Length: 526
Ligand code: G4P
Image 1 (tube, rainbow, N blue to C red):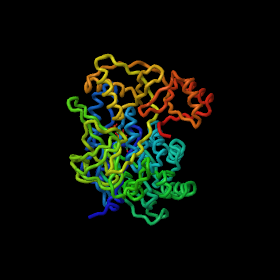
Image 2: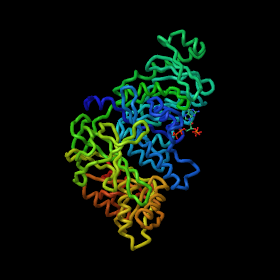
Image 3: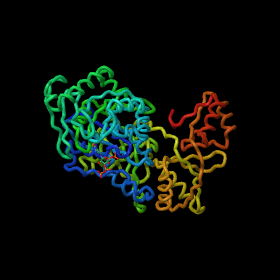
Image 4: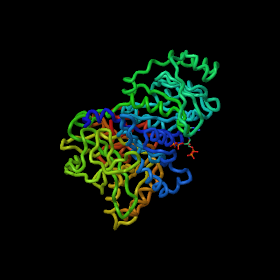
């Protein structure tokens, strides 16, 4: 039987992130094809929200429902056990994606060669940077006209604020695209535009091999050699330590749709990407190979059926072996719990699992005992630090329209916030509740769910707000003075932390100037 350390070292848990339409779904599907988890293209449902449906969020939830099935995709590839964590495509659910990033050990970023780095990718990269998550970049759609690869590399560096190192190099692009030279393995793969056919490989000894000239023509071969020389001159040699430290991102070029460059990416990925890493709890660092089990809830997916207020809590195993029906401690409540029906998705099939190892994700059916960020252990009082909340982008006052249902509203609101649907603040001046989200859709989701699941009716009142800033100071008197002066704009978050609600960038800048002893944070963890 494989030991705990064997199980850990063969696991690769990661997420693919991209701006919508760059090719995340296509790439995921191709990886699953290589892993034998699916056998035909088109088997993975895109969880991309169709553009036509943006005003109809019920439809979106239906589409999101589909994505529960693909929330975690586990499959074996050679000796490796791979877990891909899916992230929602719609930007209004960006919080979900941020949280998913707390449960992965590395990330693959997909960038469209014609569009370059887009807004959502930039933001997600910030989260990776905060956590030093190792990233690999896949530049996609080389079969289409796009930018010069050197320009793309410069842009990746500038926009994603990370050093890059190409590990493969395209020979032309668009209609003239001929293939990719694999720098990592020193091999040449020729492009055959086909959705099913796998790459044709040309065996070569070195970049000077005349077989390259035969395969792509003298002119392109000369250009390739020139490019490679430039790369060797400009970019330091690839260092996997730097990659693991989140300091450099290896870059691959290809076309997901044509299954081109995908296997190369995967083969390199399993070699260089980290197996589950130690996880920081408030108390100490926890090594995955520690015998006692521990894990945390990083995502809760609600069931949209109002008659069953049930959901699935997704738990990332951080250390030890998780076992079905074993008594575990739910640290926040201090209760002992046994999980009779934990599930996992393996090769697209959902099944009850008896055990899971660090890096794995188990789905636990739940009726409201879990909150995002909850830690479960074999007894130790550990608290894994979740992802900080980011300042929401949109704010509204939430008003109860049925005084008889105040209790239901409180309960519902609490539950939805536990699930991480949005953030709740209470203004300390007028006592009004403020809900903050990253997109308009969440307000609709909350209103609908409060009514259908809790029988509470609410109304939104507009609130023009720029940002929520968590504040702190080493000088308690300065903090008090600030809170007094800004009392109308002070709120507390659900943990009781002080938050300054700045209504404009100008106001915020003025406050920063006027109160140099106060530190303003745009995330709740500092
Ligand atoms: P996403 O999950 O990141 O949002 O992107 P997705 O994979 O759904 O891909 C977005 C569109 O880009 C899809 O086309 C897909 O077929 C196309 N695409 C992905 N990879 C490549 C590639 O390497 N080359 C080219 N030329 N296109 C690519 P669509 O028309 O929006 O959808 P569909 O009807 O083809 O599924």
